[in-house]
Image (cartoon, rainbow, N blue to C red):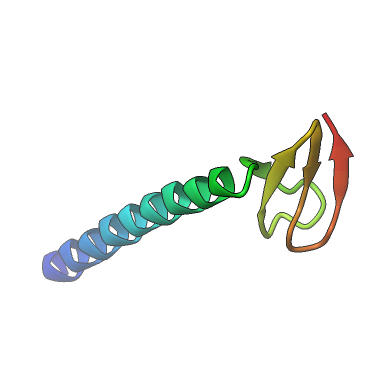
Length: 67
């Protein structure tokens, strides 16, 4: 049981690290195209929003909102 728990902890840590790397990469890509990364979409909860010119929008569902 202890070995399974240790394996799960290692997998969780690896997944969290991968998530941080991906978020940093996506934020960098957004900056490259003149946008910034916003919060999680309040409509679909399946994507982070992108921000540009005072407008926040979701690339997944298309929801737009003024800031």
